[in-house]
Image 1: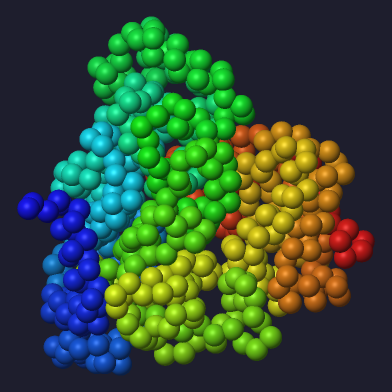
Image 2: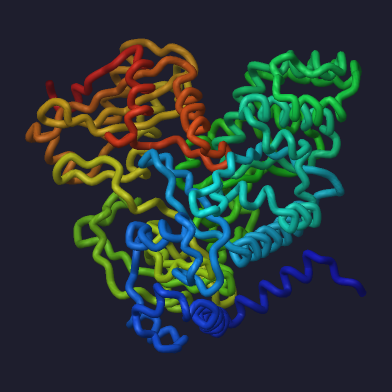
Length: 581
């Protein structure tokens, strides 16, 4: 009996996770043997030791800022063994949308291998539940500019490092994840033209599409908001077999024109299906009848987009992609039936060495989310020493020069698969909104927006996107929330929303400060339609990739260009009266 590729991958995963402790010890030994001669590790006097106890006692916990001087030397062309035994030949840029500038992160072959392993693993489990036929994926993926650093190293986003790699492309073919669009569309010079052509190629190959994908849920929602505006033009292109004049890039035009030929029957079918939809509900299964699911990262800052994504997806399941970051991968989604809000990720014990900092909430701060950022920390524990139900911050050691690196992610242990933990992502630890003793995170902002949305429901108005800032220009300082709305809402409803936002921040420091007027009334500023598109365009102009774009949930003073875009697009503002005038 022949066993399928998927069954083999699952068998390998089961073997790895049965003895996760031994695999972790072996993984750490390999990392330290390969990189023990690096300057960074030598300075801590490990002296060739490769055991976990020595590693933890000699090498300190770090954040990106601790490693920045070492990474900068690599970027500037110093190819001596600084962080790794072998020279680093590529750099990944993190999305960097919060602080306005991306971080440099070392990238190497081992990170590529771990990416392929994670993708193969989650695909094997996914395909067991939702088998897909021989076909393609409608993927909204975009390469970004590659920048050559002054030291001659290629720097680009982590996703672009993957999309450009032949080994990665072949692996994607193996798991039925070939993109409908040619490379010229993925790496096109203009995001708007690439998005239009992704939609067009997906429609031309509509019967072959097995699933819909983008790195982040936000990009899928953005694609279908765009589809609502351009669907008739797409139908015309298919009917006449001539690409729209909006596509001006010669490389994109040439590549897409090869697969576009007149097809009036397909154009009429698409037109009639779109015309028959009610407010675009279920547009994805209607136009791509063989698609089995919608796939992408849907946790954390992507949760606010799930409602709209479910609207477009109709009865198709939403499936959250694997858990990782620009720094490296952590876990695979091996239970694809779980809704995105409940998804867990099983840690692959051979792709890095993992530690977990136990986070205890002080007495009296038993909130349901990571609102309390004043956690009490204890000594990090190993992968197999975590306890179900407890919360931890993830610490990563990988093959690309990050040692005991604090990711800043808070996770909860949902259970174990064999002896490896299954993590539920809770939030980023970083503070967003704070004026004095108040401490609010991205999750708190998200919950406040969700609470206020209830006032909009009756008017059938949606929040397209949102962000925030702390305004200290007047005394006392106050929170400002920016909303872009799908259509107009009444003054009365928006004032109610503003009050609701103010009352929804439950952090004790915020409530106390508001009561004694140490923090001023929250302000809701309503933005002109298209403002968040302008912000996206701004980041694209800086060389960011749409695939990695996340709307900045808080705009700091260093982000002056985004502040300017927001400021010039405010059309209404409201001050909360929730705590009195």
